[in-house]
Image (tube, rainbow, N blue to C red; front, side):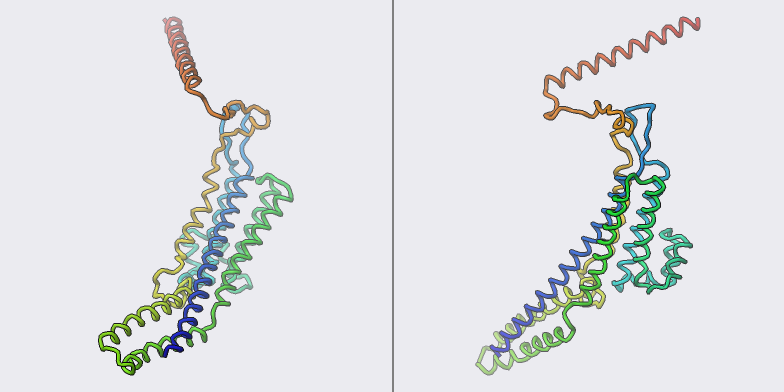
Length: 332
């Protein structure tokens, strides 16, 4: 029994280590996929064409109406791509790929009817529809750049396509990790070893003359520790809870990953809605209002600026009062 216990302990801990490595890898790749999708939004928002106002050099610049529409459409494509990607390898979101699920996406405003038709009619498996969305994003960026809504040359387009290549690779890595996990036969032999040592422990305790209460206590402790480790390993080997090993307890929460990516799809769009640097001011080289001291203002300089501000406000107030008095006199 002692030799069998050593073999079981080694086999079980090795199984747990490999299972956790799979869980950690899937978590890492999911986060990388999320980060690369955020990169698309940041990249496009930073290069979107902005208004150039000549009337007021201090006016904040913002997106042109056309470039904003491009960014909003790109952010929606990012959200749909992420949703369809997780639906392709998670059982919890697989119903989205069914005909009813695709119609529901149209009803909820995630897809247009024409987009749904293009995805459904495409001669690709349902689990590969997110790759069509990735191609739509690339084509949208290419045509937007050619139309002048995205500022940049062909090198900018190449960088965007390269980021999309990384997204494709990260998404494919998740499926590869799930398909290349520990074989089911190894999990079966580990379960057999655990069951054998747990069933043999009471026999061993009786054979060596161990007290009854110690045998009962030892059986309970071994069952908790060894069976608990085995159940933990089964949860790790199913990171997205596709086989219900963990009965829905503590998997990688796909809903959270999707929600975070949805928030990131508009984060860069909204964050760069207005720029404190006016485009015309940069063109004219007039950015004095944005140039500040390296160390900031000292207390004395701050007091002097406050005094100048108050004096200027007082002068403006007096001038306004004089103008009002002159207008009243002229009216009389």
